[in-house]
Length: 298
Length: 62
Image: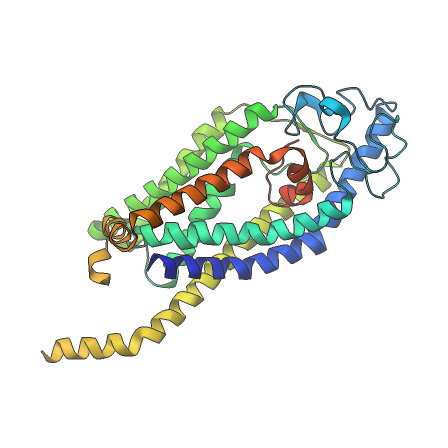
């Protein structure tokens, strides 16, 4: 039975993954590349080509980018080099728009291709973990009936994985410099994910308790209240200011687009999952109906 | 079968009955290996390869 649930979750993930992979390829990839180039071009002008300085670079300031050694883009031994000659060249490779224009360990083509595949696998992972395993165990406790359970799981998944963490750390536009170091942001993000998951469990618990005693509408209101608790850590958490060459409007637009992208993933996961569940139910219905008839006849 | 699993506790029990200890251990080990790999394989190749995706998913790091 667990295998059956897992299969259904992964199937839903595949459907959502195809769509999000397409979103990556058609929308996100070009946008992120463009935003990165804007930021790098601005850094070239503003920073006077000070690529080795910690401040002028979009990546590697604060010693982050997964390199906690504080060495910016020296990357220990320079092995983080790129096809176009690295970043010790006073920036001549920046505006070329070709491979290696962005200070990474991989070429732009690899970045784009891997990102598209990652987009697909991301949805498969979420589908398997949330709509497969978590749904199997939590199904009896998830509010609602039929398709509503799938949508409730989708909402809980979004709040846990993205919604709650974004209250503290909203999606940053590419190339933006953030005031909080990565060593602070990772536990903050993880902590908000835990807070989001606990809030969803609490909301489900409150709904079920009130549903039994006070009816549906009171239960819905009561179930929504726990989400207000998320405002507490969001207010208490340190502020992460974002700076970059992009205009605030563009930055807001990109953040909105990426939020929209994740909402779309969860919506597709939930919708597909609901469809697969109802298809499965209708398949098994005749036997269930005949069993019921037998029982009532008895 | 379904009637025994109508609570979260029932589901856990059902999984315990349906899965052999070896299957459960294998599953746990697989998840642990996956998590460990994802956690420590980050820099810089995999991390940078997923740069655009991480932005699109709102999991930016820099």
